[in-house]
Length: 314
Ligand SMILES: NC(=O)c1ccc[n+]([C@@H]2O[C@H](COP(=O)([O-])OP(=O)(O)OC[C@H]3O[C@@H](n4cnc5c(N)ncnc54)[C@H](O)[C@@H]3O)[C@@H](O)[C@H]2O)c1
Image 1 (cartoon, protein in one colour):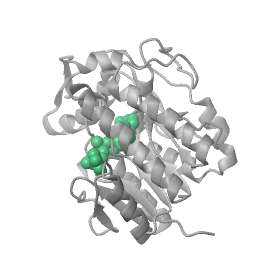
Image 2 (tube, protein in one colour):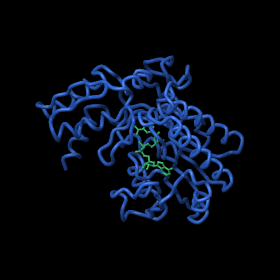
Image 3 (cartoon, rainbow, N blue to C red):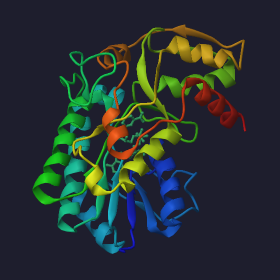
Image 4 (cartoon, protein in one colour):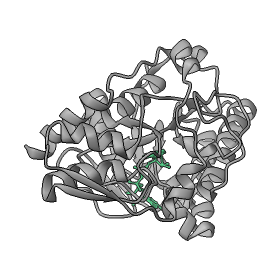
């Protein structure tokens, strides 16, 4: 069996840090090369190799892939939904070109696998709000969503046309305590825990009854690794899989925090992100992921809240 050597691009970000650490546990520290445009995240320091890399520089990326003997790439560099609305051209450019660079190099160097995340942001105001299915009306209204939907079809194209084994998940909003979120519409669900512990109050940028699909980071990391380790015949969807774990509103997450911190209070000052949130489904149907490669979430809101607060305090 070929020895795998993995390159994680965007390793200093919210998902990258935890995914890199998880992959290092499985494949060995030396076999997972972390890379990012910004400096190495302190949680990665000393745990394995790190290279400074701009994914937009295709030549340099190609050189690194050859030099390091890379066999798999996890591409996590992107501009997220809220930041993307502030700079649509930059978001489109980075989100598309980074993927095309990686897919081209994967094709040329015959990499064994590529991972690239999509998002529930592919869905738009005309998609079903509840239990949104894998295949439905998809008319994204943010530049981020447009870039993710286009990216899904590039993945499908490279798989069908060139045999690149690229796999993808449509992540919901991700909640974690290790590394900070990077400018998404669901970032409030991370900030709220930090503020609850620090000052016992939080001003939310979404309205109290805004339901969105969410997932705790340990579930997201496990979903990613389970998808990537599934045998190729099980992967029937080569655009991107719906995955889901829980849905809640700011009011509900506040109530779950109040069970641990009774003095905690929340207020609401919706901003431009409300409109983005309104365009997305409230819950997601992930029956294809369950049927094809056995996806099953572990964390609900109350289990996540207990774990978040415990870890943030320790
Ligand atoms: N976090 C979520 O809730 C969420 C939800 C759905 C999908 N996703 C997707 O998951 C992926 C990772 O998201 P994240 O939350 O970890 O994002 P993040 O913003 O926290 O991390 C992205 C990382 O990419 C790096 N980067 C940016 N431009 C780069 C470049 N040119 N070259 C190399 N690195 C560069 C950044 O420095 C950053 O460390 C993205 O594709 C995102 O769209 C995230």
